[in-house]
Image (cartoon, one colour):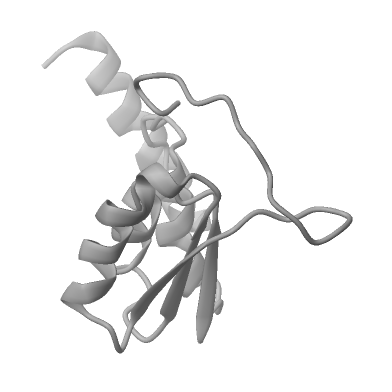
Length: 117
């Protein structure tokens, strides 16, 4: 056993009576942050994914919030087909809308690169 592991065990023995534990720091990610929310008492009936792009965030969040319904909102029409496929798989839970927000009604033009990002 390495010196660091031995040190960690010794420190954890000292901390144990207080309820604390020394653990390796894990890199913060969106998914880890979302996974903490139910344990903190957060429950959501509806979640709106603004700027859904291909819907990857919704796919990642859906199993974490199994009771929630998701609306994927995306401005690029080029993303409509992929969002429609994802929404079609479970229409009771997933919907999408191709639209953009602005100060007035109308049509918006975007420059879209070949990779859509």
